[in-house]
Image 1 (cartoon, rainbow over the protein chains, first blue to last red):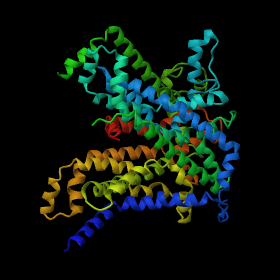
Image 2: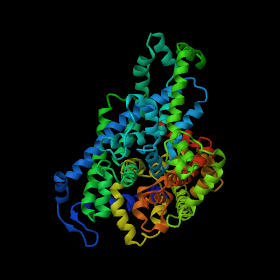
Image 3: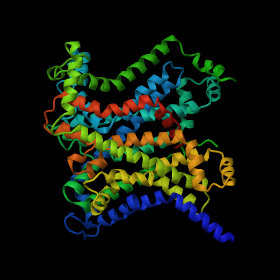
Amino acid sequence: MSARSAQLKRDLTGWLWVSPWVIGFLAFLFGPMLVSLYYSFTDYPLLEPPIWTGLDNYRRMLSDETFRAVLWRTAKFAIIFIPLATVLALAIAGLLNGKVKAGGFFQAAVFIPTLVPMAGSAMIWLWMLNGEYGLINMTITRLFGWAGLTGANWLSDTKWAMPSIVMISLWSVGQMVIVYLAALKEVPDEMLEAAALDGMGPIRRFLSVVLPLISPVILFNVVTLMIGALQIFAIPYILSAATPGGDPRAMYFYTMYMYDNGFRYGQMGYASAQAWVQLLITLGLTAMLFIASKRLVHYRA
Amino acid sequence: MSRDGSSTVIRGERGILSRVIVYTTLILITIAFLMPLVWMVATSFKTQSEASRATFSLLPDDPTKIFQNAKDNYTAVWNDPVVRFPVYLRNTLIIAGLSVIGMALSSAIVAYGFARLDWRGKKALFALVLATMMIPFPVVMGPMFLLFSWIGWIGSLKPLWVPAFFAGAFNVFMLRQFFMGIPKDLDEAARIDGCGNWGIFWRIILPLSKPALAVVALFHFVFVWNDFLAPLIFLRNQDQFTLALGLQLYQSKAGQTPWNHLMAASTLVIAPVLVLFLLTQGALVKSVATTGIKG
């Protein structure tokens, strides 16, 4: 066998082994993406074939009040949720990183909520945040009733909808706690000790020794959180459907509007354009995070 | 210097007071994270009037009634004539079972191609695999729905498990890392014995990778169990609903579902993943820790 045909055979074998992924990629990802790109330039009411309308769908977004509202609400969620989740996860991980007895128990306690299905989580919080008999309001009344605080109608009150969604999302921060804890354990004790001998207090040690060392992990987690936050769907979808007295707009997010356009209003063309805008925003923000973090993130040689 | 020696320097500053603060905070955090689940289970053991009353009590007024209440509530949920949880459980198990097998097997095959074989285009294709992890599912859900309805799969469970047989990017990444850690001498020895790639994969790599495959299976099971958006789009008829969809249907069907019943239904949907977590003794936690840092 010649060298060239041996190489060809190796290539063929390799591609054959990875072919399940390649076929799946073409059929369930790349193909649908191309199709959705095409639909985004059409008017497609599903029952009739798509009609080419050029950039109309994209132009429509600019003047669509609902679109602007859901985009802003989703951005607001991401801006509030990502820093809170990151700080909370780092703080809990920091507490667990010391010499803590029963550390495994505490880890399990914060991790368990991440396993709860979104639908289950929505039901639990529907109950916890109930205006009349919810545990949250009862607790607030018991603790702060003397100050006149009795809680709120968390889910039906327009101004409390966003804090509620953020809080429910924070409930599943446990996965990140575990990741940060593992990263903190990799920080060499010698470096901390040297810093302590230099007279650094715990806060300075954290900021100037620990934080730079775990910055790649933080970047990875922030990117993951960002991609997830821009897609938020199940929790607000279920909760707003379950709160008939509430303001339906207060929990209306980007993916929900896209879902409604595509599957309820028969506007697959407009939904596809929104899908592509979502993709471009996701990729754009990811790229920005990576570029912005070039100076901040410290990769060990 | 030894690890113990250095940690005394750091932790020497920690007096009893700071230790009390650390443990108090941790206990408060634990209560905050677990209370919603405890409250859910407690509510499912109460009568309807006890559940919709402002009380902090975890137990029913008459604690001896707890078993009777539990039986009443869970049977009511299980035997609901409209929202049929036994059917949804069966559907979810079918989807989860098939998906888990498909995902573990196909991801392992693809990972072998990336970890053990040399071919042109490998690096570029692997970068593409990683890049696809960033693509949001909502971007493709419309065309996927049209594709599945065009080939006649809407009205069946196929849209939810067939794609699992075409590997998942994250799982391929994880298994590839694992396979690369298996010594290549084993391959060479098997090759001398006349094994081809398939033989090496099947007889050497797979048996040595059981822990990693178990993690892939576990994660994918939890993912399928929890998935909401894909079933919402692809399943049109109520007989095909999964537990996650069924739970929402149960809440919304009358608008006035009693809280004790709704919490019993939620417990039914949530309990299996929690039991799985306890049975695997933190295997999930460990793997989150390792894949998270390497990621």
